[in-house]
Image 1 (cartoon, helix red, strand yellow):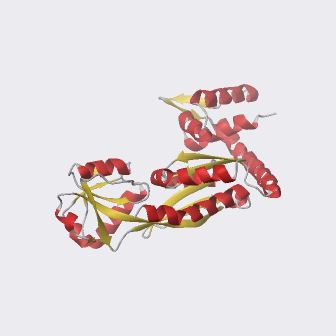
Image 2 (cartoon, one colour):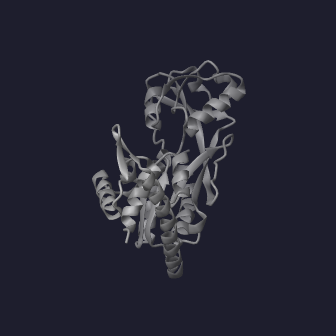
Image 3 (cartoon, one colour):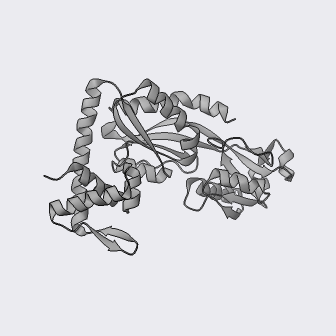
Length: 304
């Protein structure tokens, strides 16, 4: 009989594309995942992974088996949901994928309160890009995602995935302390045409929003520096190297060399919780979403 844990490891490699990424999603070491798949190869007498450069690729047989594993894991999830629903209390492991600034500014408090209120619940956090986390929910690799979108780019929801709004996060233009705009209370987008911008790399939600919004205003933004971490963007602004649009959530205290200026109209990004429709009855998911919505007003007021 095939071992479910080994099938889960293979499925994770198929979803994430590498042993290392699969291990991170499962909370294992890459060596442990490799050992699980090696045992599965011996059980099935089939080669499942082949070397490809510095990484690996799944054989055709492995892809077929990973597809079967996905169906089995879905059946197991349904059984777990029914058991937890009958008990009526959040319990078991809950895997959560969350984007960086919410992982820093929202989730520590939420996870701490969940641990106090529901000691039988083992909630585990992985920091991951919003679009990636939604796909992981849809494919059954994580139970819950905390993601965000912007007004001009609504969050795409795959079939079979449900969502609830957590709240709205405000954003400011950050400028060096000696910048001409630092003395202003507000600034309009049209006034930023000649600025040097610091932003996230292309393909990220924040970068795409900035480019599309400023193009719609009538000019192409001059991007000079790209950094994934908001704290790095703040440091670049502090050094006088440009300006940046940075959300308040998870930003922390600004250094004295950086001044926030309100953009008129003020940009907002909306936070969402997402989960598979088949797991919607699970008390752990219902309680975690409720907790995030309950915490949000306090978190938002502390970032202003």
